[in-house]
Length: 86
Image (cartoon, rainbow, N blue to C red; front, side):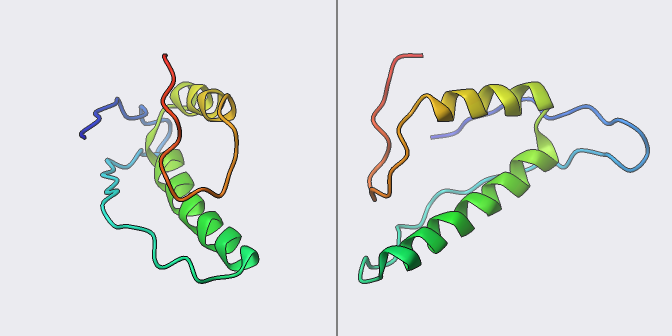
């Protein structure tokens, strides 16, 4: 799947957005870990995405994405989130 979205506009001299490619292509490592280790793993993955998205997306897109994500239920399941109509 390829998704293309608009990047943020530069504001000021030190706030140039970064053209970003996010590759989601590796499977989650084996599940023989504690709940705390799983939470740390998912948190680390989320922080990488957060850094990439905040460096490149317009704030309006980022905030709308947050709303879409919060409309789903948080979980630690290894599978994809259920699809819903948008």
